Image 1 (cartoon, helix red, strand yellow):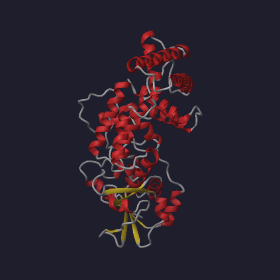
Image 2 (cartoon, one colour):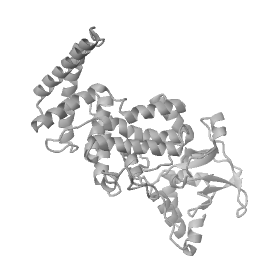
Image 3 (spheres, one colour):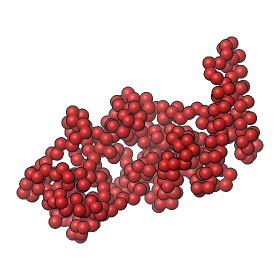
Image 4 (cartoon, rainbow, N blue to C red):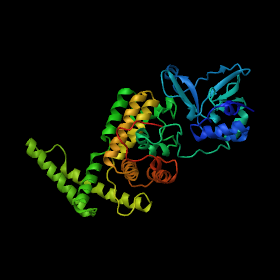
Length: 410
């Protein structure tokens, strides 16, 4: 059925080959044992990536021109695809575009006789072209785990911490949480997602957006103001205030700040004080109702409260650092610096992954959910449970406290 580089070379290696992810591990084992039904079940359930020229994809976005090659070991042309764990780091003109076995079977070029899976690697496998069979396998593909880890990536150090700050989004999207050399959606898709969701269509916009997220300037200032008022009351009295005291204190602070502005400028404020007070009063009610739901769903325990929603910005900054690399708006060094800053900013505000996580969830809900408790919320409940319980979760493996002097190690 196929010729596997993994099966043919493993015995002669000085040290066993280390698979980067569970996908390559399963493909390696199935190929070595000649278990082709399992091999195809795994292959059909994962993403496949075509190596491409960045210049070409910029010229013809939205299409994947096939680039067959000839391997002297096989008669006829071959077409190369790679699984996500085998992708080389983003560099130069070399990019990858994402597809899958189903799409490949549908558009398979008749002149190509071999599908080369991960050619030139220990898990290399050449498969005879058989699009009809591939289509059948796609109907019984093996689902991938929601939490994905790059076993050969950063898993415990300060870079891992910075990447783990984006884990809730990564796990929700089924992406590898600690993939530094980000190319998840493929070059064209990464660019399109940034443009659609963030209005980022070039390097200057990526730099600006990343900086705003790292400063915590994207979330509504009202959210953080309300939570800081409550934190001040908790520090003063030792317990969380009730809704009445919280609202009254927030109003006094707003009135006092307005008076300071008037005294300083000698002019009426340029903002509507009554509207700001009403906004914060309504916001406090929303926060309390969300926290009650969080406790009912196991996201908050006892009398715990959300300290801050800056995690919503810092977590997205962690992701934005890598999204920019995937779209080639950033280089690897810039991505690493942004990740380290995201982790450091998070540690300055929060004391644990649990505190960070609930701040992220509340920020997401205030942004998108409007107290509907729909997918924007329920998706986070599911992700929270995964990250709270699964052994490979960074919340369980990456220490919250990190030394700024730590040298990142794998």
